[in-house]
Image 1 (cartoon, rainbow, N blue to C red):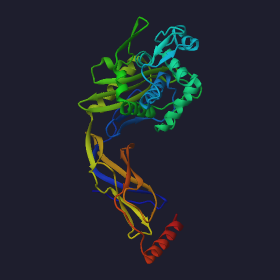
Image 2: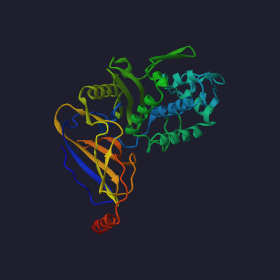
Image 3: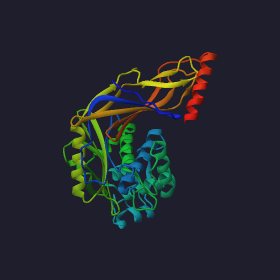
Image 4: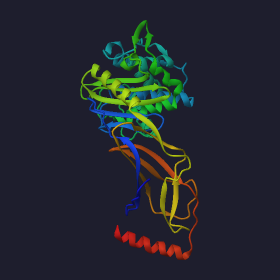
Amino acid sequence: MFRHFRTLSTSFALLLILVLPVQAQLFETRAEQAFLIDAETGTVLYAKDADKPIPPASLAKLMTMEVVFHALKSGRLSMDDEFLVSENAWRTGGAPSGTSTMFAAIRSSIRLEDLIQGVVVQSANDGCIIIAEGMAGSEENFAQLMTERARRIGLSTSVFRNSTGLPAEGQIVTVRELALLAHHIWREYPEYYRYYSQTEFTWNRIRQTNRNPLLRMDIGADGLKTGYTAESGYAIVGSVERQGRRIFAALSGLPSENARAEEARRILDWGMRAFEKREIYTADEVVGEAKLYGGEKGGVALKAKAPVAIFVPITNRDRLVARIVYEGPLQAPVEEGMAVGTLKVWIGDTLSQETPLYTAESVGTGSLHSRAIDAIGELLVGWMR
């Protein structure tokens, strides 16, 4: 089923060319940056300039809400906590600002649940600043929390300077990290994710509708956020769930609101219809072998902790390529269950999935003679490197 190749390097890559029919990437979009993932398997279905840093605009509010949801989940906040509307919040993000607002009254106190709805549904800048000041003392301090939380959940590029996404030097995200952030919010905070499907919210006797056009399309959409900057154009992070399957998309660099709505619908529809799930390794199936130095034998079997499944396109068939990557050779003895590498799977040119691999067995230290032979072999390989 496979052919095996190994590189002469301390970082080993075992190449597995699976004879499994899949489709090359055929989707085209007007978005300058795009990223599409399957929620269950983490399969990257589509990527276009997905790691280019861009200003987040209102999409930064996804990170603002992650900080809030994390505080709620940990018990540091409750929905009934009240936050004071400062003059700064009112002037910078409220009615006088001319930006998205929930029209919070200056010097009033507002329950956190109402502020969350104002931010999620109405994209309220005043709501963001009120929360930021109430949680961290200032918006600057809160932005530091946002960046710290981004790193803790695996977002290595995103940097936040404020809670609103209003233009600020050095504030950047990528569409890849925005989609991953949306997936994280859905997975970690299901009790709060529901607010993203709320179609309207009334505060201070003013009724406002959710700006996300996907919610009005009857396509199974239930989130999440739109954004716009003059520098990077119109952007959106969206999610669709149909028949138990969910996907997340992030798009940026579109020329208009209509183009944003159209392209988001197109890529989400395509992601739902153009792929089928394949299990490429069953539970406990040996995926490959890592080279072992000084052991009872020269290698140790590797496996994943669960079945490895991936969504593959259903037309225009090509080959699925998988590589086992690890730092090696490993040093004996090794215990069963040690994390030693990663299975990386490509569909065409796109790195679509990464799965941790673990030793499938314990291997003890070899005899003095076998260790001497390994040492001579390692010296020869080292000289070749």
